[in-house]
Image (cartoon, rainbow, N blue to C red):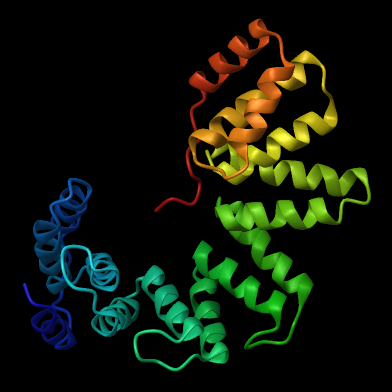
Length: 269
């Protein structure tokens, strides 16, 4: 299947009606690494009017999965999917304006406008990205309170970067117990979702709270999980902590790590 023919077909517009089957088939094929079958299913779904199929097809074109990358064709498909109501596609269009990709000029003002539209529809990536623009003063006036409000909305939807950003901001400004408590709460949620940064930061916080065996066991569990998820500093920290612990406590910590199950992502679509 050629990119040019795909782009030409979809620029003609969407047919009426939707069918979930092609989307489900496409996702299953994608997970199995059958990219050609996935592209065909997403193509069929998009022609039938399913905006989500168009989004996934555009992602494959953008990333070059099963086909040569074609960001310009991907952008055209993202725009069509966004016009059909797919909010994640709208966020991708905004990102391309933010970065100056796919043949569009870098334009922070347009990116902020598009992120804002997607954020109004509750897209957690757009909420975070809009917050970042407010934090940096790009395309919109610098407004830290507004940025934090956007970050918090995204964090409530389990956006990992928002959780970790808020955790770091509260940790860095942790002049009082309330700030430190906020930092811990955000990192704790990130860790519960299985994120390496959240897990590593929870190990640090746990050892700051105490170095008795109970705290060491919990910190060891966090570091073990963070190391398994390739956090760059976790393996060395885990090695140092293991050397300082009783063997029986290490075994308890390893058992807790094996029993760990990430909580469901509240913002997953």
